[in-house]
Amino acid sequence: MDELNDVLAAVGPRLRELRRERGITLAALAETTGISESTLSRLESGGRRPNLELLLPLARAYGVPLDELVGAPNTGDPRVHLRPVRRYGMTFVPLTRRAGGMQAYKLVIPAEGPAADPDPKTHEGYEWLYVLNGRLRLLLGDQDLVLKPGEVAEFDTHVPHWLGAAGTEAVELLVLFGLQGERAHLRARST
Image (tube, rainbow, N blue to C red; front, side):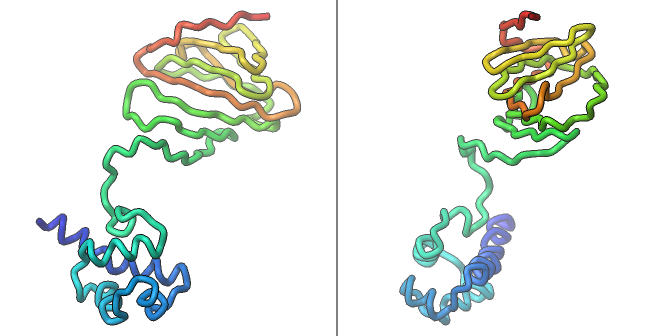
């Protein structure tokens, strides 16, 4: 019950912040929603407990889902919310949110990075790469490979490896990574 009270207590400040961010007055919001200014004010200050009768018109007026107004916990939304992460001069866009198991990323490596001086690394796992755009330089053990769009590589990450752009343009690729050695069963050929 405490969790429900905490969620409901946070609705008022969230409503006030949303209204202020959008530059809407209580009077204008009252006119749009049909909810009195005093009720809206009490909702925002926590003096009135939110209910569906009040929240539905507010969600419509703000053009947001109801769960955003109440700060509802994630409920297994199947959509992937892409939040890029920059590391080692590269941009990683996670395409999965699973803890453990196979992970999928879109990886963008700019032409000028990572460092021109390759430093191959090893770690636990297994990787599968698919080049979408540009040319990828892959150092894998004693091999120095250049993969073009549509080409695939698969390798055990215990083998020293390094990824970089080959040429003057950025390279974009899809990366599947698994800690348990899951394999896509596709092999790259050196040219």
